[in-house]
Length: 285
Image (cartoon, rainbow, N blue to C red; front, side, top):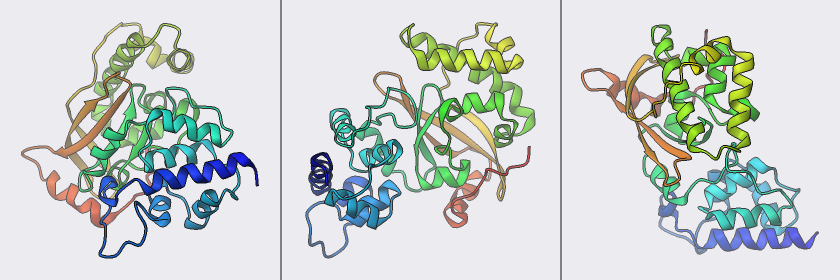
């Protein structure tokens, strides 16, 4: 057992004990013998097995992956400094600002946890999905499972035809223009030496003539509130309002989806809680 792993376990335990269940959207229950969250609750929030999390707190587990550390940081509502400390204790490099392991502000996570009946997720300005609630997974599929450049939905839009099955074909041209204009705005807002944004644009220009042509128009427009149609494998076309809350630095957005007025989308969104999580990886193109 290494010293680092003992320190890692102690740090996880200290962070767990300071959080109340209702801080993370859990029902406290009548009897609680421990302060803060129970180990099984942290495991549930992080998507880990209880046995695995118990091993981590005892300092006896294997070195956790970057994805698991990011999930634990979000489950425990760690600040950026605490998240960085967690990664160092686990002998992992601190993640860059972008990517699927990016830090999510605890306040944004708190708001996400208070929308259990509304599809909601946090994405980066490059359209990398960082975290989703259960209703968002049921509506959109698991958008957090991708890695590398493919973690960006914009990248998949231009390089993976199956990604476009999320929207009706009649809407594809409008989404194409909107994605590219939004991406140009995000790239311009970042430091000129930002490698993540530069790599994304360079790869798309090389691999997608469609992207290259639209990019050359130099259109700029940040995606804000939108009305859009989403194709769901069980519910059909669901028309929603997509609203967003932008973080102070502009790098992350909390998106949530509400029924579009004048449609039957309210009933469809309510059905998401019955249908549950969908495996949308096999959507027809």
